[in-house]
Image 1 (spheres, rainbow, N blue to C red):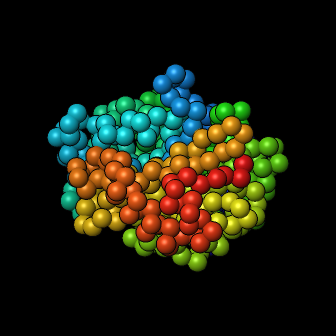
Image 2: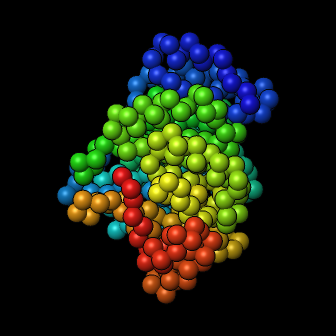
Length: 355
């Protein structure tokens, strides 16, 4: 695991703790990282965005991967009424709505070709995310550097200009990987982490998570990790999730595998290993056209999470909530591959949170 020592000075300068995740020895990636680091790390934790709208519920919504490039871009003008999230208004009605922005926004956009793996998004298409109600978008993934460090900065600028909190970096954690917000009299810290280039060294991140926890924050880790298209998590995911929880993380929400993975439980803390796709141009089987939308809400004095399955096979790239019969089948399959202690709660579609 390679730690980028060039950033040590930044730690002292900004009085924040950040880490470099493990990456390959790819020199090009290292140079992109070095070029973008000082511009990316503001030295300040991101200010939370909570929508002040009476129609929004006092809840935190999490979805998985959102990609607006390639075939999604071509289909956008054909959707009725023209928004991938038009069937999701009720599910995305929380005051905080978090998704993984699985793309880059270069200064000069060129449409991503079929089978192309360097995703480019036309900034004019970001309006659909505004209309969809998103507040937080993670850039801690394996595609936000698709078009280099300058395009990463362009992505930050375009998203910030539209009012989004854009947190995280592909290869390290810094102050701008953290977003703080208060909802329903609860102080939250949202931590964006990418682990697809290698898992971060515990020595670098554990003290920071502990500080957030000790300051009374409810810490949620939003993590890009795991094996693509596998319905069950791997051992490395499990080991890392346990270390996060041991350090003080209260909830883990994962993405990247493009399918909904099992739900784990460790020390009474929930681990959603993968929420699957929300909007993506993958159509070849049911698993890649299904996703989970989490709704964290406070009921009286206790927090719970409602799990809502969605599908985008009926209309490609336009997800909708599954009907009760579809949901029942989905919940049973999910419960059978998840922690046995959660079986009945998953069948009911509501899990208790220990906040």
